[in-house]
Length: 318
Image 1 (cartoon, rainbow, N blue to C red):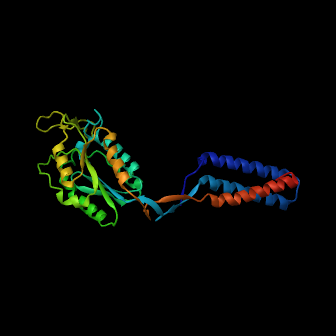
Image 2 (cartoon, rainbow, N blue to C red):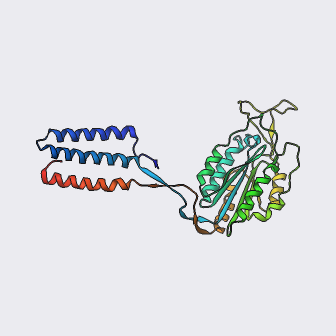
Image 3 (spheres, rainbow, N blue to C red):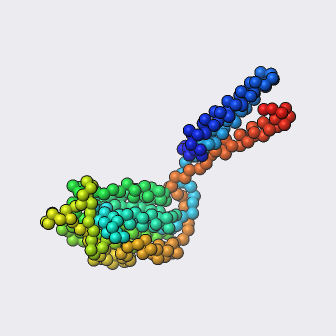
């Protein structure tokens, strides 16, 4: 059970208390039998209490609802190494600003799909297994912060391979579903390793794209202490430069598009084609849906109000 008040409690409580007080005062002051007064005060009190609970807007959680959904699993694999905060997106903004906005666009446009999220820096981590609850993925993305420079140990996109393979296989085992992959990175490998081939994963991928962020000119990277990361060889500001060759190799291995992301509209054609190629199916949603139950209080309150109107018409008072 959860509550989403219509009016703030600091406002509605004094109003209801004032109304109750005025009603009780007027009932006590009138000339009538004590039993009539007690019954009138009781009815008014119940109405006020019901109004309080209606304003609380109680809601219950509903699980495993039958909903209309797309027959798509959308897997987002996100490079979260420190270079993804280089300041060369849209001229001067962190690359991750563009990544977050573009992921939000993908989720919003493909709502009804199952979404999964993997991040990788020094290691890969599944932040969200495939879920119908898009808010879970949005929340997971919002928790991603700039890594500490002492934690960062260089970039290696092959780190994501094992977790990526597991999630792709789990998606491929679902009958009648398509697997769309969005692999997000600047393509840099700075730990001295070679890029692993992703060719063996091609059979699990039905579409999607490798999305590249960054520029050939490069961008400086702020550290978590407010300054800029220095190049250890020159002690000058370090620059991160996009490596499109690596990104194109991954795209070729997976047989999906490579898109250099400079603005959100770069992927609109792809997202539109995914929506067009999907179909709607009925299934059990694992999203949590909140259902209003205030009407349980509204109906008896309505009956009591009708009764009070009848009493007022007959007796000229509450």
